[in-house]
Amino acid sequence: MLSERANEPSKMIKSDPQSVLETLLVRCREKWTPCGDGEMVWRVWGAEDAARTVILLHGGFGAWNHWVRNIPTLETRYRTIVPDLPGCGDSSEAPKPYDAESLAAILSDGLDIVVPHEKRFDLVSFSFGGVLSGLLARLQARRIQALTLVGSPILGLTGSGPANELVEVPPGLPPEESAPLYRHNLQKLMVCDPKAADDLALLIQTENMSKARLRSRGIARTSILAESLRDLPCPLRCIFGDKDVTLDPDLPGIRTFVEQIQPGAPFHIISDAGHWVQFEAADHVNELLPTLIDQSTR
Image (cartoon, rainbow, N blue to C red; front, side):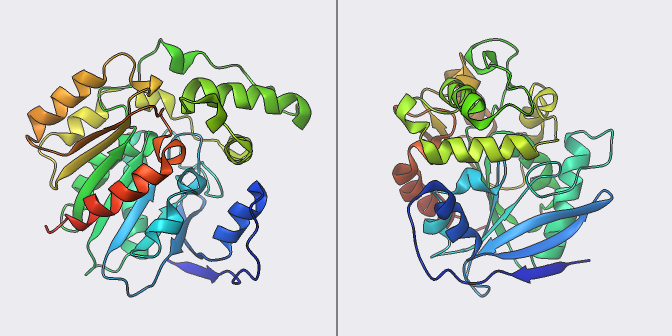
């Protein structure tokens, strides 16, 4: 089952954070596929007849807007499809109990509806989206052209270190009190330069946390991604910020692991960038992604 809605085109481009998001949303086409007792939303940018299709998966406690600074570049070249994962953003929750395998199955079933069966696609996944991507690649082995992981904890999210030093934001807290706490968490977890936790980042974080129901950290702490990347049915590429605290202290270990399972796999480390590298170092990532995608010839 697929339901679809086209949004109205924007008549005006503004630069304030809310307008940045709204301007992107009015350009997309929304598609809906089954998810538990409800539906999962997929947003589509770019020409329907584009030569290549790219799927972007967001991180834990996130939504499509994790790619807000990358969609405008990608949509000019590719049919760019960005779902809200089950239990995130505007998507319904997955049936409980859920795990990486059941979440990947929901994604794969949705992909079979949203992307025509004769179409191949590239998969680009951020953080927790990457944790599901090895499993998804196996389910879509016939069609996936390449997998690019962005800031994904390949060897498992550790239970200690800076990525766990976040402050709790009590529900119902007034915005003037919650904003400093959300900004603190952005600076601690997501970015390297504190200035990168700007008003747009703060708006995205606030909106996403208010909607997040998927509890992803327990899954991210497992070895499921490393296991599912062995004998991957497609080429693997990686992009990481060199200051990504979710990988602390083992970015070199991740690089060694990737080289072992796919010798010569492109492994790009972007300097002075944190976990949310495609947001903080958007210009660099926007140059890099089309190069990687266009290399896919499988």
